[in-house]
Image 1: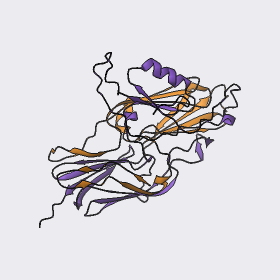
Image 2: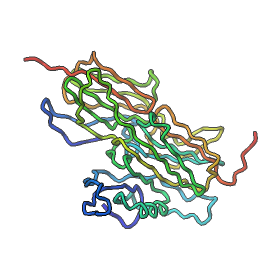
Image 3: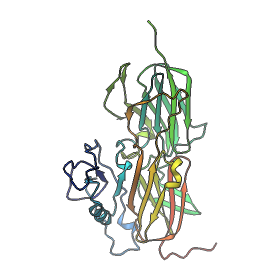
Image 4: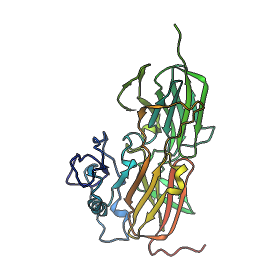
Length: 206
Length: 143
């Protein structure tokens, strides 16, 4: 996807196989992604800059660039007012919901899964993770981001964007590939906003 | 609404990688796992929050650079996945939706000019990087 207007959500890509200047770069197929809605700055909030005029782009847009065009990329970044530029690994995650993206790995006797839960309260009264013998995982919690007003450092901030998950309760359900022994579940909701779990497989004998 | 991925067949069973969400999980913006930004404004300062799940263990490698005109550049490294395993088994990835390990950068603009010296970063314990930076030319109240 390439658009001549709008510079929201730039993403780096290594999809130029005939680029002889960087033979180290592997050919990577373009990621399957959805348009990213960047933070939109209202013109009324820029009252201290008289000449600041924010274009109202009709919807988000996306630009793919090869990774070796750093000067071109910096030129695009300098022209971006309301977009967010991602490079490296940040540009390679799957576009999806802000919380609830899942990694699942499998070994001979266990499943390992990770769930991204940024902004989710780690209070034991609000968070729970249950697993059923057929491999279904149910997560319940409450988010603490996405407020309209934030009080911090004795100041009241009015949020201009609402990209992060709004506050409130949520549930997330997903399925592991096979049956598990839910008594042998070992989980950890770390202080980095990621829930990790390892659970033993179960093989039903006929 | 589900976060959907392609099904992968294994030797044992099929991976059903649909994730079903209810409540506020469905209401946030659709975006990348790392780099979703919210920006807020008060009378004297701006606040911005960046979603950085899974990076807290590489917190010392996070570099946040704020320029006078409001440009913010956050650089860091996403750590390798350390799967706890008592038998040292090899794990094979079946579903991969989070960002792979490696360096990354996030660049965006604040609505106005700021004083880069007066900024207060805070890495919350829920994977959110929160920063308050004072606007340029603002006299700090002494109260």
